[in-house]
Image 1 (cartoon, rainbow, N blue to C red):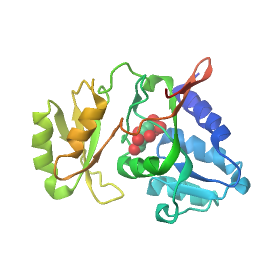
Image 2 (cartoon, protein in one colour; image 1 turned 120 degrees about the horizontal axis):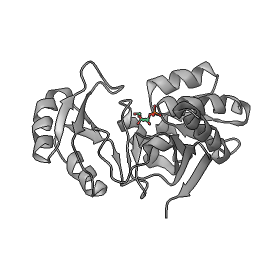
Image 3 (cartoon, protein in one colour; image 1 turned 180 degrees about the vertical axis):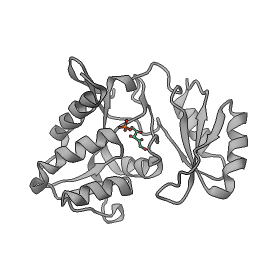
Image 4 (spheres, rainbow, N blue to C red; image 1 turned 45 degrees about the vertical axis):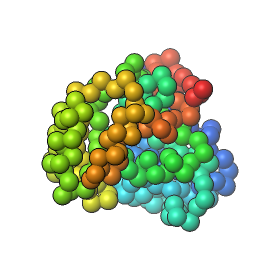
Length: 220
Ligand code: 5RP
């Protein structure tokens, strides 16, 4: 089974968590693209979607799925998104696709976060995947110096501008043993919009594609 087949299996398994006549939160990335295709097959049963990126919005619109502004909604039942890494406590690194800030906002409003991944994303300690940090452009070098003081090796993701008009710094070389603490410390640096640690708001359900099928895990 290829990595993409495992992503697809996890994505289609997430359909089970989408209730009829609901508004579903939709993340970003290649795994979520499979989920959007799956949503297309039940689009007439859906009220619509809230999207975490311009890229996902475009795919949802192509399928004729109505898009809602998050400000119009008090809550969303379910948010479905991928991850770059996830650990046993369901804390994640996200933002490989530079959509981390909107992803974190939609996840905050959702009652349930369903994380869909292939089995290469499960790690014992977060940090091998460089941690993305979205920064206000004029603060980029200042934030990079502060991130170095935290023990990381920041690298500017050249040529990338987020949907919010900001820059991304990827922090290499971190061994993240206290994800909640690091998430807060990085977010406290002036000029940081947010960072890709999703530990304060971890996933509730993990659907992981494996060669043996899709495994399910619930946050305890
Ligand atoms: C985008 C993300 C994605 O969820 C993450 O990068 C995983 O992507 P993929 O499903 O393509 O492996 O956080 O900002």
